[in-house]
Image (tube, rainbow, N blue to C red):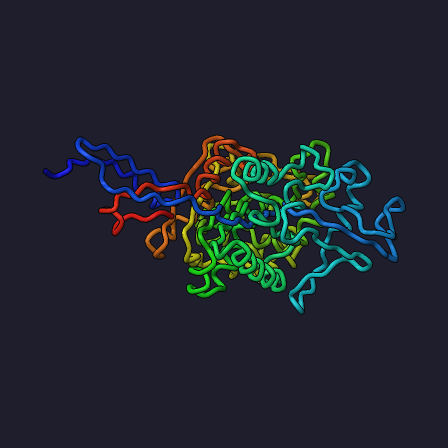
Length: 440
């Protein structure tokens, strides 16, 4: 008499990298069942986004912007994000120390004379869990996710969960040493975790760095070292909000912070040019900015930068726009997570100003919103869907309603989702199915 076996195989977790569950029932005697013991946790490397890495400074300046600005320091001190600098008077000193200078001949940037900056904590998560070293709750970044993985999932800081902070002011074209160090860290993390492949998790700008790095490696290298790429809030096609940053500045959503005070520093960041909207996502009849001197689309960057009196911005755009513009598939399993249904700027309208005044020295009189996560437009967030069918590895997209761009790193549902993607779990596999089903 044959054994009558009924089983339900939940294969979606296999496809999408979640724990595999197989349920069996029998009416006579049980079939042979093979139990696969849980494997170690998949090691994780976290890539922060724009503003997500702490930066320290040392000063030996010949001159300063204001008499009250510090000219010399004996030791390194916290520059970003130091909340003490975000008060009236101190903000201008802070912005001037953060500001890069651009060489239009060498097409590269450098710090202000007498300003030395460094990014602490490469390889661990210390300087990316909070944006300031005092760990003020206002500046929380990856801390919720890291704490969850450590306390609930058996991870260890600087061992199975690691971080790769960087100088977020710069785009990948100026970060060859960082890229080399990241590749070495991935290989080291793989080896020190018994040859377990590494999961890469990025937020915002960090995802573009991951894509750039993966596209620079061979498929054999990626197959050996990378388990998956988990993308959180990625601006694959840029973001309209960046256009306003160049025009009139961005106050970091801090009430009372003068946007014009921050504008010069923000404009001088090549990463800002890197994050401008791409013509592969926006058409040449979609107006991003409207003002007294005309309308501006993705085809008008040169005129736009000339009209806001910042022609170097166009050069920086030329330096960076090719880095990921073709959006080549990364060649690894991708999970693209993003927030939705949060009003997100799609266009800005600047009004007329007094004679002799610069039109973009004033806030927009109107912001026209569309879909997105409050910072990145939806069409850009789902740019990874262009990889579906273009690579052997799977690509999965998942939206989270009413979850903002930064808030997603604190969202319990999203953190739980990510932790499931990282779980190997244990599998019960019927021996007759072993040819077709495997644990991941």
